[in-house]
Image 1: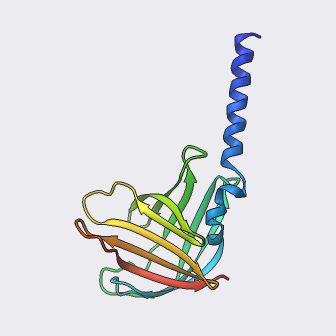
Image 2: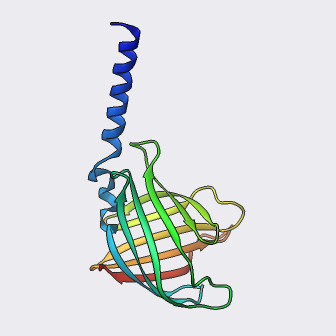
Image 3: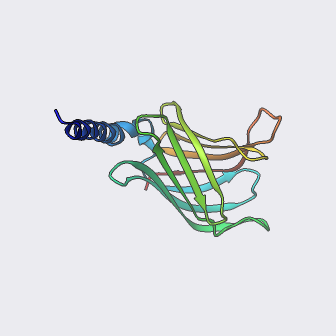
Amino acid sequence: MKPIAILVTIYAGLLNAQNTASTGKEQWSGLSFLEGAWDAKTLGGTSGADASGSYTFRQELSGHILARHASNAGCKGPDGFDCDHGDLLYVYRDPPGQALKAIYFDNEGHVIHYSVSTPAPNTAVFIADAPAPGPDIRLVYELKGGVMFGKFQMRTPGKTEWTSYLEWSGGKR
């Protein structure tokens, strides 16, 4: 076999293996409970905000990512709380076949890289990777009795307990 034919065969095999590993519903099986459109209403937290809105989790880019898009319907918050908040969260595997990762962007310029785990059925935990100086960050989603509960939490350096900055819940639309 000619060297070019060998390279083409190897490349085609790698490409096929990558596509097989990175597409399909099975890669999202631990997070499938998140998929759909959800209402959200704040429950509490240290932010002091009273807000409502909705968000969707859906597969995009031919099933290679799971994307969360959020929108606000109404908000009252203390001075300094951004009631016009907008954000995007993308969950992916990098490289394909490896552990889940996520990246978050918002209209305030924050970018957060997360490692994602599913420690129990209907539970997803996003832990911020190697934070800059400051608190550790955690995002938790739990589906209980058809209601999705969410928490955005922080843990100050040297502490073991997490404090909720914002908590919310809501049903599927």
